[in-house]
Amino acid sequence: MLGATAMPQPQAWWFDPASPQLSATPVQSGGRGSAWFVHGPFGDGVLRHYRRGGAMAKLSRDRYLWGGEARVRSVAEFRLLEALQSRGLPAPAPIAAAYWRAGAWYRAAIIVAKIADARTLASTIVAGMGDEPGWHAAGAMIARFHAAGLEHGDLNAHNILFDGNDKPWLIDFDKSHLHATLDRRKAEANLARLERSIRKVGGGQSQAYLQRVIAALRAGYRTHGDIA
Image 1 (cartoon, rainbow, N blue to C red):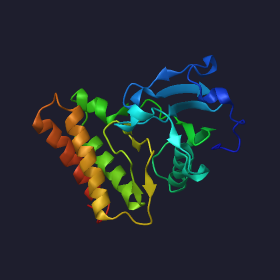
Image 2: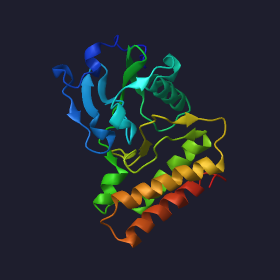
Image 3: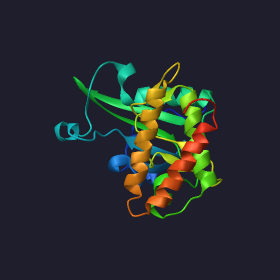
Image 4: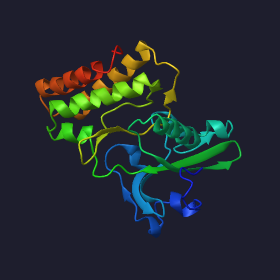
């Protein structure tokens, strides 16, 4: 699958981080060691190979049961990103998606546009940096996605970015779903997951600092209508 009509036809080497044409460098924050910053005919991007986590990773690290193309992880995420882009939401543009089927199993990968000069919310918390306006903006950004019906599959501090202009972005939409309306229970579960992540990555910070982060995020979230 290809994200832009002016883009050249995807080549197999686009999805191979060992390819010298890509000048791939590993993404340090999150990603399970399966994401790389790359550069190719498509410009600057992020290549991600789909990897399992938890107990399932012991059975198969990167193979998934085939259930038709529409259920392929990379295809589903690509189409979801297109839908989010059409709504003007701050998610990376999809560039290309691929999968490789072998019998009843498949492996998959996706390339999305790189967010320039980005830093993660996690990295700012680890460093004890950031401020209320930035955290407030991140909370309002999450509320926009929820208002559009998005249930993020893994809302954590590594998946919230701030670009060079301090604009917040949301990334990594694997296992995410776009509903007609997102109910309060699912929205709150997303926020609770994010709060657990903030406390986990910020284990070296004071409780007062972490509470400031969470309070500002919640306040920003509440500014976007009657969601929280």
